[in-house]
Image (cartoon, rainbow, N blue to C red; front, side, top):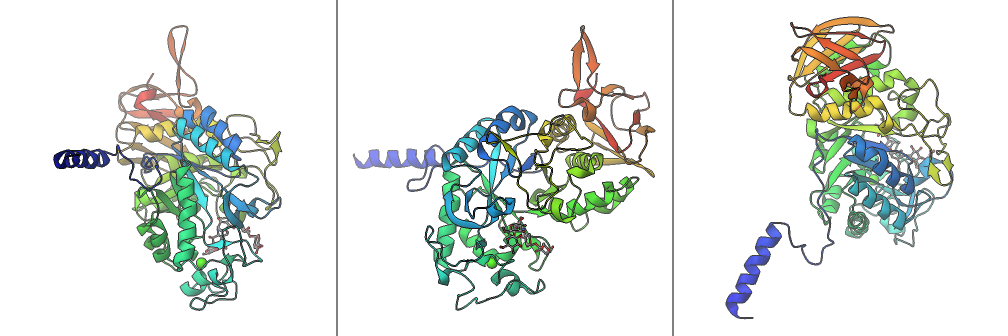
Length: 483
Ligand code: ARE
Ligand code: CA
């Protein structure tokens, strides 16, 4: 090549790489994450195995408009029948009773094809209890705080007010990795990069509270995708949870408890004034993942759960109507035993039947909230009103109602019985179809006439929404649901 040709090629390469056309050599080729923010909807898919999840992405999650899912830790773990075995890694091989590496890769590909990004749960604070030798990583004694000369701790965490104790000691016997060591950081980064090559777009950092931010920053700096979306699990402090914003988002446990306060009992909706007073102390909107529950809180009383029926659905609907936060819904399974894993049929998860709240569910069968009419309806509503400010119009003993600009309006009735409302809105007068009872396509054509799938709601000439709202139920309308 002549000098000028080399130069031209270089210019072209630089231009191409700036435009994202050329993968940087010596790094794995990964597709950057679509942005995860307030306009997206996530769902935690607790204990869904890979082959079931790939199908669910194609048939329900993608069509329902779920943008991203949080999946179980995919690495090899201790054996046993309890769900929590997956939180005790024995190596970073992507292989567990949720599926093989090939099955995991196929799931990610299927989900991506359906428009659903995959966030993997990364258990990197510790390894399985009872051993300090993990030959398949390999890790040995000196890679753990138990034996580490500088961060030595040979006990379980006993003082949650002491950061050193929280970060260097063992979480309930789980052997604590010396994440300050370059070797350990390198092993963790290699594992996360391996997941990125399979199409994963981000991570939940399990027990992030127990890993110093500097250690996580050093690990993150070694990742091949700088746009990776990270959600840190930090339940209260110290350390101060918001210091983890340097790494990524946080799960909002405050949100879960606020939802329990507001909807955990009848007539509670006005309690929403508490989270609504500037979302007081709730953090930065696009860095807080607002969830009604996760797998821990549904087992420890920290939130509403599937067993709360209509109250649980109200909280989900509410979470999807608020401008604050990055909403994450949840799909787990009915259980009565803390340890129980779901029931699988021919190797697949099984959904409880139906498209909404039921008075009882079969133990071990999944609560497939992504298939629920109300959830699908509200996911569409959530996206439709993006960018529109919350305009609070009304609150009384049982009701809480507000608009999002002129694009949508919602009424929550937390009474145990029907209530009739006439609430002033910002909506254009007309007849509307409720999207809570009508789902994502609330209008259907019957004999050439536009008809509501669910409830019909009117907005009168004075912009008052008139509806009879059933007990512990919400009604939501949008400009697209005007009949
Ligand atoms: C299992 C057994 C234990 C046994 C252990 C080791 O149940 O009896 O000691 O194994 O043999 C999950 C289960 C655990 C399970 C573990 C490992 O929930 O029961 O232990 O897997 O198999 C703190 C942490 C937070 C953590 C919660 C549970 O800060 O990070 O405790 N949450 C994550 C996951 C869990 C998972 C793990 C971490 C471990 O979401 O599902 O455990 O990988 C206050 C404090 C919080 C504290 C909270 C609860 O709010 O501020 O920091 O959370 O109390 O204790
Ligand atoms: Ca630690």
